[in-house]
Length: 382
Image 1 (cartoon, rainbow, N blue to C red):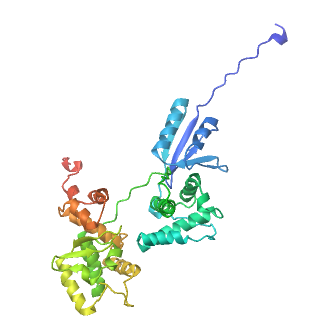
Image 2: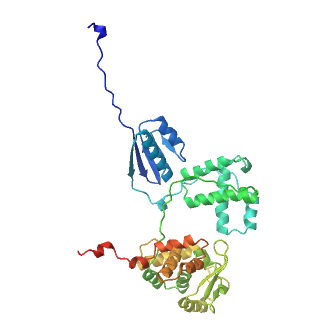
Image 3: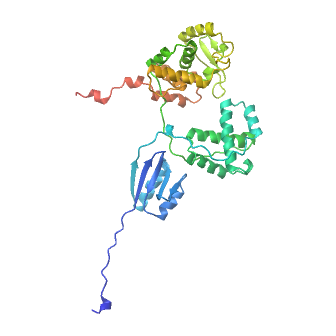
């Protein structure tokens, strides 16, 4: 056969299957590793809050069920191998919000402040709204709010979530502060700003046992300090509600404590313990409060930091290692009532919860029902 007619042996080419490696990384995100494929890149660019690191050639996305479903569906349709690994997760509570580096050249408009005042928002809410809206203004400066579009607002919220790493609850406060300006101050129509963010981890609140509460109270010698801790626990009060109590709010005839303009500007009544009443009578004789029930050293309202420090010191002396705040006493109040067969609807009213779902969290904490259930291991004849 002539040389030019010799057949070149066929080369068998084998294509390695494409693999998508998905790793659940800290901060509730997933990291993706795969050989370049234009279809996959197009899919990833369509996902919210996507990022690409050219140095490591990796993509990261929020860890959401919708995104995982889209990735698995893509792999299934295109014959890719899908590999998912779970990395050690970081406690979301320990994540630090990154401070803003945007220059503060703009101030909150007077109309915004006046509207907050007219609508009688609490001082804490006013401060949060003003801080949030002022940062929003400076992000878009020199643009004025009227020039900011809805698309701009979504971009800003993504910046707050991705760059500033704000929590879900703070994100909601930012949205509310922005909505307040456009809807309440400017009288615009209601808008919804939705950001598909990582799934929020659910944390059960810290709760003390009844023995731990007793140990805390027993370590406190100062009568005023003891009364403050006993009042907060026995009535399920928020720290602000405790410090806003006035002498006239203690109704010893009906054995009730009146909470005036608590969270959400709502009045309610809660329990007045007989043991607490005996202690308060001693306190009245010694301190003679006139307006506020608990008065600071300067004669005005007692400070939140001071009462938190009292509790912190008492926990240390009682040898309690849990992370305990004044709000822990409120959680403990609700949980202990539930464990003593108090109807959850009454607990909801005592706590001042509008939504019953908020109160139902305590059904996940109480040990009463758990103590009545035997582990299957106990049924084995070992």
